[in-house]
Length: 202
Image 1 (cartoon, one colour):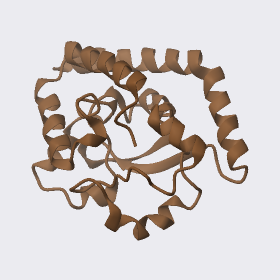
Image 2 (tube, helix red, strand yellow):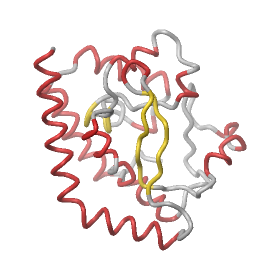
Image 3 (cartoon, helix red, strand yellow):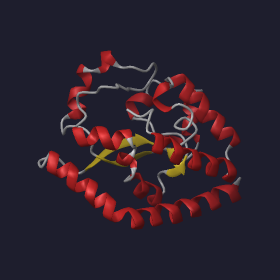
Image 4 (spheres, helix red, strand yellow):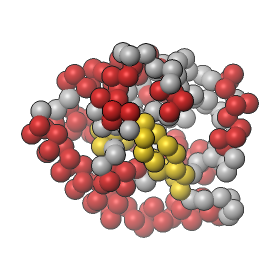
């Protein structure tokens, strides 16, 4: 397992760094579009997430919502469309026009390549939850926090937003129990296919 973790970390750094360099012009274009739609808002949205062993870190994304999205959340909690300790809403009124496109295509997640380089995220692993979500976790669900969280994982390539919280937990734990370089590469390849299809994101 140590050998796997070491090789995984090297691949994370190489792929994430190359990805940022190659995609830089595209990332700048997305930043300009976000700024043009909402000049007062920031391009990058950062949020505290829970990583391996419960350690908190700041995760980065392209901003896809209005600037006061967090303050508006309390008014929308009763419209949550997934069960469990997670919030998802297909027609979330907080999402901007540019935001709807970059969320649908998962482009909003690209700044997380920087999180991968810093080491608080991996390319493949369970999605890092919010602290308020972890507060509702059972001991079994906390097993999700036993590995470094990822940009993509088994949940994303198995149905994504069409799956509920309990199903996500089961898939994440299944990944943790069976993880390996071959599994990671298969998930990365399937992620590309899912992103190109862009059917299950919201």
